[in-house]
Image 1 (cartoon, rainbow, N blue to C red):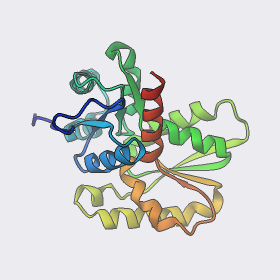
Image 2: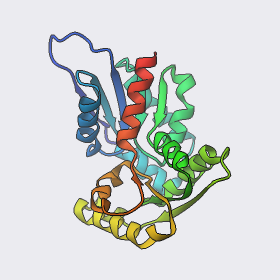
Image 3: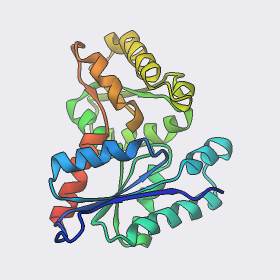
Image 4: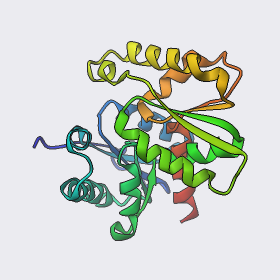
Length: 232
C-alpha cells in the first residue's frame, strides 16, 4: 500500500496560533481548498493534513470492514500527533465512522457534512441531497435522517449523479458541469439542495441563479471546526 501524502503548514519561528485544525482527505486535491478556507476564516491558524486515496478506493471495492476501520484510526492518530483541537474528515463515505472514533482518539472529530445537514434541515421543506459516489448515499441518508428526526416539516430525498469517473479522470470542469446539470433537472421539486461531497462544492458557482439554496460542506465544516477549537 502506498504511503499516504502528508501536508503541514506553519511559519518557521512563529508562535503557535490558538487554532489548529487537522484534515483527513482521500485526495490531495482537497488540501489547498481547506488550507485557503481555514486561512480566510481563522487567519494565523495552523492546518495539518493527511491524504490517503487508497482508503476510499478500498471502501468502494469492498465496503467498510474492520481492516479499513483500523487504517482509518491509524490515519486519525497521525493527525492527532500534531495536536489539533479538532480533526475534520472530508470524505462523506466514511466520515461518520471517523466521527465515532473520536472518543477512543481523545480528540474531537467532525464529519464534513454534519454542519451542512444541520443547515439544510433548519431551512426546512423538501431537501435534495445530491451525491456523485454511490457509497456516499447510505451514510449521507442516515445523517440527514438523524438531523431531521425532530422535525416533521422536513422531507429528505437523496439523488445520485454519475459524475465520479470525470473526477477520477481529472476532468474537474466536466465533473462540476455534470453535477450542475443534474441539480437543474431536479431543482424544481425541492426547496433546498445539498451537495453531499466536498469535491462537489465548486459546482455551486454554476448554480448561483437558482431560486433555492444550494448548500456545500467545506466552508460550513471549517466554520464549525474553528468554533469547536475556540470553545475548548
